[in-house]
Length: 465
Image (cartoon, rainbow, N blue to C red; front, side, top):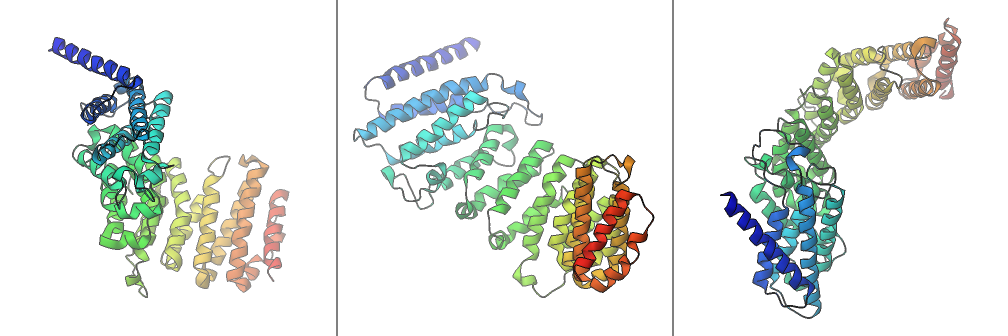
């Protein structure tokens, strides 16, 4: 068996050397030979299939793959140059062969597009992108986006109404399926790369091909795949109109897939999860069919309830930081219906503002942003919580201005200015209540730095009279 493998390798090497000599000369190469050479070269540069898909891969699993691919991509570049020269000399190629060549070369190059991927490196990534450029040149377009959509191009009969993107995604979906995708890390990252080439006009038309891979990638046990899947879904959410996502229940499917991760204890996952699930919850709740109704089981309501529950009992600082950052957008998405959770929200905000979170005070700043969102959205009833909010602000200003608080002057100023913004919104929503609560604020016996910022807080209400 080893001898047969060596003979096969020698035969392939001889074919490649013969091809390079013929490409360098002016010898005519038939379409069948070109197709055979392209297939052989592409098979040699693809990221190898993993022998055990259940084991996480690392750089050691792909030792030498990038260097081998670099050589093969240089050969592919020469083949593409040859086809371009022949076309310039009025040679006619079969449209099917041209299309297959362009698509297969493009897919192979996408597998090495980023140098930080485990199987790629700087030189291989550069060479692969040169192949992509040559593919675009051969097709007669100026960018990858134009190649995928074929807008305005009719070269060699290779364009269709849908462009190349549908054909590319069809070929990708033949292998990138739920049962086998973990065995093909290169194709997984090709999908990610191709997705980010698409724009708003193209992405929505191809959701039938683009959405399933993101859903089964996000449903994986491995952290990096969860994050990758969420990022893909976030890109789809950012570049597809909400109305299209509500068709056929696609937004609901995305929401359910993301909701399954909401109990995760991995800060890295939650950090990318909350922006995505908040956005899709907005899309679902914006359905015109729900207009004029107050649904207590709306997607945003369920999300806010879960977030407040997690925040109320969390002691791990890294998770508290993620939750604090997620709260302001969720409150904005919830709108005035946040009133249903006012008591829980005030308790959570009081706890987080009273807890030191390091020299940057990032969590406290996020909670102040959350209070601003609450006042903006719930202004008709905010006077009910005005006293609790003012107590939070005064306590926070006192804490951060203490000499042993461990905060620099810049951070103290940032925190106190956010407090002023909360006070400004509070006064605009409930001026009489706010002014009454602020009476005697400056007469409190506190240290000088705190006195200075309390005086400024008092001036906010005076400026709005």
